[in-house]
Length: 408
Ligand code: HEM
Image (cartoon, rainbow, N blue to C red; front, side, top):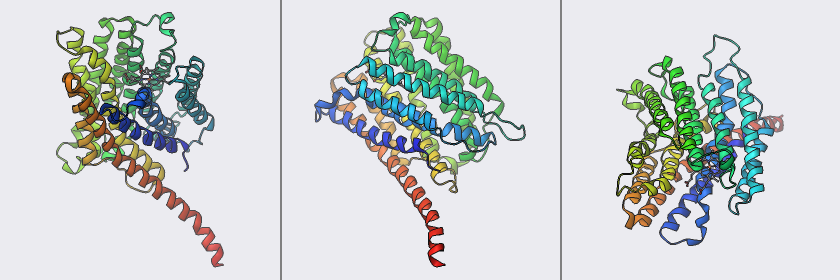
């Protein structure tokens, strides 16, 4: 049962909690000296919590959906990923090219090994319901590879020989619209029946959604690569339509069943609001509307996307997956409560308000990070409880033979 990825996921969530607190304090001018933590704040969540979780759960999920035996933990993949992360954490603050390249290469290798492992977990029999998410995971990881190459070379001038016009945007788009979007879609598709107790509204729509999302992400990567809206605009339309179609698939079967409208399901569905926010105002940036804070948006919108969407999606899905692993007998339940739901959304509202109200930006952003910080607390506590009770159960089970022996 022991899954070392989950331990590291928990560790990075704890660090993400501290990262948000640190950002709140910096904005309030209470803590001026940790301002260099910007990279870590985003990557504790994206690489540390979500990528770690994805690496831990995908082989288990695909094998179980495909009716295959539970795969053994691949320590080579675990070690490569975590060594890479550790080396990046050391290499990024001083911008040390050798360490960044080594860290990036190790994480790249781990992702390739995971893709090969997932590629081999094919459904051998037709009578079991195969993992529909598997192709989303494999393609999502392919986008991660691209994101890693661009991210690793971001401060080392690789974009010159790769001829990338706007490298940071290519990095963010490959990871968010490619990797995260596809993997999240796969998880929604594979896990929905277990937590909603019913199937998606139109199961046959999954294949077109997959292609629309994959091609949409490609357009969104090539757009900033060549700085051309000829790629970005169709990419955006395809990706957005696929996302809305997927969400309708999730929402329609729940209509009329109030029991199912829990904070967990609301976390999952409403997290997508924070993807739509930058998309809806993108035309105003592209058209360079006067007085519109385009630069402020480019600087701050990624943070809102990571906390509002990636992290919030995690609020619901991480406790669910932790329960699957640590408490396999308990019913499938998404994470979060009303407090985390309201606080995380208010955080997004304050961050966006700060972009537009420039004079009060520091205060508003301080409040935003403060809200994100408190919104994470119930989730961290929930995860801790799941891990603790899982560990206790394990100890109790181990204790039974010992008691039986001593009773003889
Ligand atoms: C080996 C893996 C990775 C490396 C080497 C890497 C590297 C970088 C670098 C150097 C930056 C620029 C930071 C700055 O300008 O302050 C950056 C920004 C960013 N990265 Fe990554 N990254 C990696 C993986 C990821 C992943 C997996 C995601 C998301 C799923 C991600 C999302 C982002 C975002 C959203 C930003 C913008 C942050 C901001 O503007 O504050 N990165 N990354």
